[in-house]
Length: 177
Image 1 (cartoon, rainbow, N blue to C red):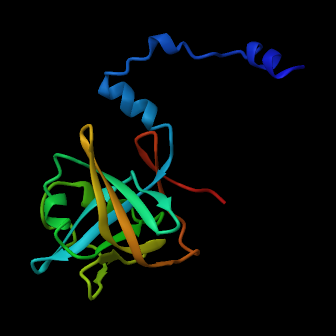
Image 2: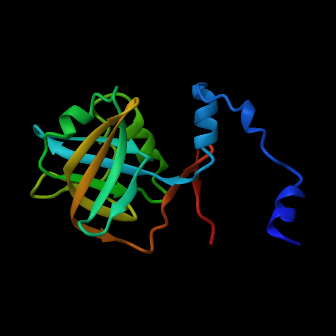
C-alpha cells in the first residue's frame, strides 16, 4: 500500500472548511488538545512575592539559553513582575494543582499557602516543583491578545523524581508511569 493509498483510506478526515477560527470557545477547545506543562512565573517585588500561572511555557534556544511564556495583555501582575531583575520559573509538580489555581486566581495574596523561596536577584521559586529556572527578560513581543516574553536563563535546576503537572483538555492531569 502506498502512502497516498493509506491517506485516502482513512476512516475519518477532518472537514477543515467547517473550522470556526474566530470562535474563542472553539479555539480554546482545539488548542487544549495539546498537553502542556504548568509553570509559575514569580518574583519578589516591593517586599512581597508576585506571580502568575502560565501553561504557555516553552524552550526556545540552547545558545543562548532562552525560554518563553505568553502572558495576556490583561494581566495586572505582569507589569509589576517585568520590573524585577530576575524572574523565577517553577515547572509545577504533579501534586501542585492547588498552587496553579492560586497563581491563576485574581488577587494579590496568591502565596499565602505556598512554600516558596527567593534568590538574591529576586526570583521566587515554588518548593516541590519539578524544575526551576532563574531568568531575566530578554525580549517582549506583542502578539494578538498576549505578550510573548523571551526570557534569558541564568541558573537552573530540576528534580527528576518529581513528575510535572500537565494541563490538557482544560483539565489538570498527571503523567502515568
